[in-house]
Image 1 (cartoon, rainbow, N blue to C red):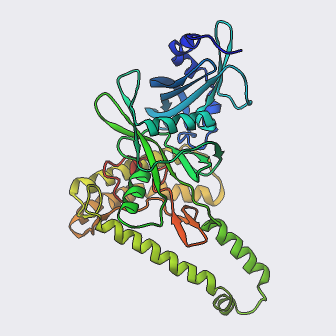
Image 2: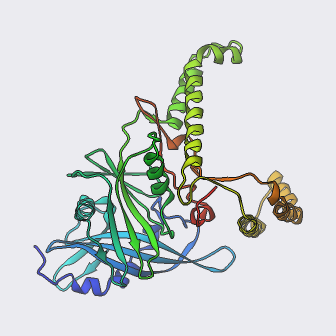
Image 3: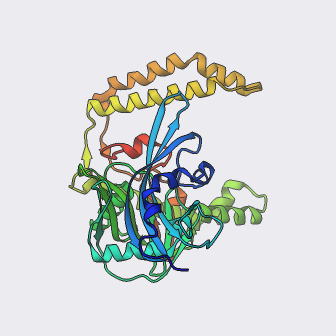
Amino acid sequence: MALEEGEFDSLISNLDSVIKSIKDEKIQKFRWFQEKALDIKNKRLFDYAILHIDKSIIIIAALIDFIFNTINGEEKKSRYYFPLIVRKNILSDDYLTTYQGSNYLAVIYDAVDDVEYIRCLDRILRDGKDVEFKSGGRLKPYMLLSHDIYSSERLNNKSSNSLTLLNKNEIVKTFRRMVHGMNPDLEMTYMLRKYGFLNVQDIRGYFLYVDKDNNIYTLSMFAEYIDNIADMWQYTQDYLRNFISKYDGSDCLNYIYKNCGDYISEVNDISDLIANMHIKLSSIAEENFGVISPKEFDVNDLVNQIISNLNLLFKYIGSGEYSGEIEYMIKDILENKDFLFDSISNIKDLVPYFGKYLRCHGDLHLEQLLKTGDGYILIDFEGEPTNQYLREASTCRR
């Protein structure tokens, strides 16, 4: 049964209550949810926009504030982009929550799992028109390349954000946790490709949320899907497994040099690739790129953040129960924490001897390097998702 016009009105007016009705365990199961170790104290609807509505579905771009109690007893707030799709029937049992309307049961899903949301984003991207949020903020689409899409498929457990595969060899990457400014993955990928470094994905377009004070947040981007043999971590494991199965028990070092020349050659190629990437990053003469000298306040901020994190760590390990060698190790660490703090504080005195700041990947490991038939592609420039300081640094410099 299709819904009559206006029947979603009650759901929209009660959207904050609908958000609160989502069970915490359903939120915490998502890989992109970064505060899994913290208890959710509350969740509140910060802002929303209706991206699409008809008689059968409604697609909502919701911005949700999650409130936590941290390890040290302080309150912490994190804002997430949470696109929702509401249907009048149950398509699958992985829905977030339900809402009882006047003559229908609305079923609320995470929209990134649904092709209708992807098609909706594609329409907005091609139309190029802003979408107004309730608070006066705007969803701003930016299209760099033009072509159509027809279907999509979700990719699970591949990223700390949300990935959806499109049939036109594209990935829609949804940046869940909202951090002020241009997301480094978008910024770095775009700038590297713009300046001729082609071992990264191409980008068709992206979406920004601009609040009423003109602060920007990156919500998602449409990027090239890389058809690959494997990421280099999986490729390396398979290679080593095959190597070990064929090992004849002879002198190991000689056996490696005799039988691993192809892999050693790949390591050399990858080393050249990474070096060339950093050379390119150092030569880009645009804001937030190139080479700069660290300022004293930069170092002070970094040192203070390290000290703050250490205090949290010491409080955490000090409240635990240990046995055997672990107990002695923890005791030794805690007894020498003043020495550690003093040593870290002394870093501030070394500012005149520091080198230069240079943009880099931020979370470069073998899973971020895809092996293709033509070489290698570097992906996911966002930085380590668990390191909030690096991700929220205003210049995103390493």
